[in-house]
Image 1 (tube, one colour):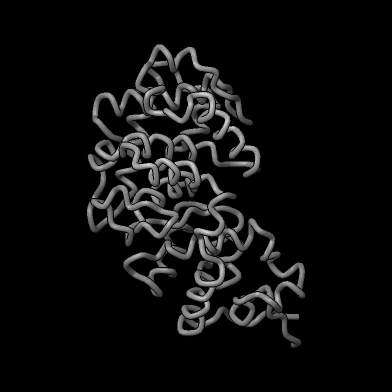
Image 2 (cartoon, helix red, strand yellow):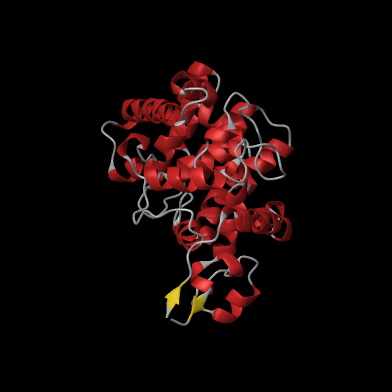
Length: 294
């Protein structure tokens, strides 16, 4: 058995648009950490609170979705959904019962939140720190590096040299990894308000966003011929994003949420379940779903 070549762009674009229509992102927010900053956004809370909840939710978003959603909700319930009030009060935040999660202790998670609080106290918003490095019309990488370095600096002032659990919560965008959680955080704050993302940072162009690259997007992107790279890193995220920009140059990452949730929801098994493949909207352009005889 062999597989056919990747589909042409002209074949793929209308199918991606149909995925957006048939799997609307807004219908799946309850299974995604975006539900938390989105709630604050819809409640009309201050931009600094939305940003801080977005950062906290995004950085905890690894491993089991059910587990990290539970931890985030537990934290917000404990502070009565007044997250900004909590992190701006360093004494209260230092004594708060932050939950432990996987690689990070409660203390390390608290250091992340307190570092965000210190930046907001000094700069009024996380956006201000991001924009110090952001290169309009060129790249979001320097903006992420600016924000990452500032958070790490504050975290070290709070707790000394960064422990493993804190470093895991704050992956370094300068190191070349795919830093999926940083790109997810930016997508939430930058993309147009579509009922999921919030366009809280209109100064940043959605055209420069890179796709949050997780195992679901990684496999689907390769099956659709959106990347030829074998590793999951920053360059692969760039290549997939550039491929998607052929279909929507002003907002290439609009397809991310629906494609990712095809995998999360079990709708995509990457060719393992051919019955599901035959029902998939993308079957005609997906290499995993189209085995042919030699």
